Amino acid sequence: MKSLDDASGKHFLFKVFRAIDSTSVDGDVDAIDTEKTKKIGTYKANVPVSLPKNNLKAVSFVCEVFGYRKIQRDIDYNNPEGDGISKEENGAVVVPFELMRLQKGDIAVMYNVYFFKDASIMRPESRYEVSSLLDMLNENNKYKIKLHGHTNGNAAGRIISMRKDSKNFFSLTDTKDGFGSAKDLSEQRADAIRRYLVSNGVDQSRIEIKAWGGKRAIHDKNSARAQENVRVEVEIL
Image 1: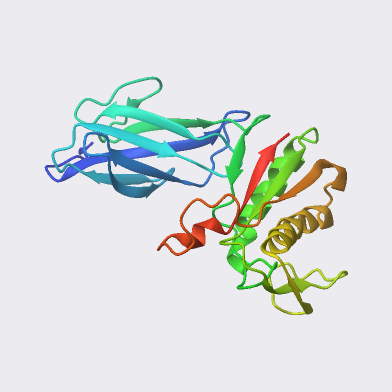
Image 2: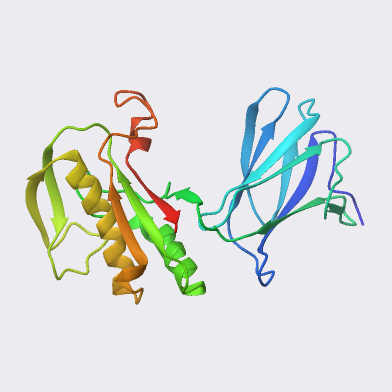
């Protein structure tokens, strides 16, 4: 069989799967040039990908799928070997990532849960990650979590929220207008996720909420990355 590798780069297959039953898991793998501490790119899991050579030597592959512990594999680009690493007949290097569920004390950031401006209502693209959280809780009914809500800055202002009996978790319909502090907004955003989980069968006693407002910002509130301050974190209790 003809080798996939050529002068322009090497081919990899990042096998990402659940440790509990070896089921493949969708996700991405970040490739980092370890010597230059520079990100090379982000690559899809479970499909062959080409990694450009660019005089690479040491490479770190990082896989972080929500609901699972982060895994990092460090390899020699020119001589890739290590636990579970193999090579297919066509030359593609297979790098396995055996995912373990989050455990007590772990905290995961819901990077892919977004909220409408001045609202405690999730945008539609948030569905996948909150569904992943639901899957995790359904997978193990002993899991209890705390949802930590954060905002960008501490200014009070308008808050758009769902009405009490609404099920429109991802739409600005059936809403009400209010006013409150940044802490109020962060609490309502965490509560929106709790309401979604409870509406899908999770016992409310398994979910706690902690509102921080803008007290635990990741970046300065005026920085180019300030939007990352708006987040909900999941702590495993």
